[in-house]
Length: 75
Image (cartoon, rainbow, N blue to C red):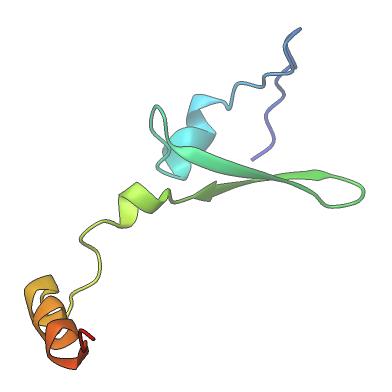
């Protein structure tokens, strides 16, 4: 897919809707812009907040706190 766009006075580029749709980009999604020598790459990325809840923990925070308390010696 090859679609032209322009750069505004502020250096902003609008990604065409067909490309946003193809990559599932929504308003406020994050992208990374890379200098690839002879071209620029725009790569969709995930924000740390997007990863919240994505990983299951075998131990709860409470269990970790209890273990810390067991191992911590107050002198």
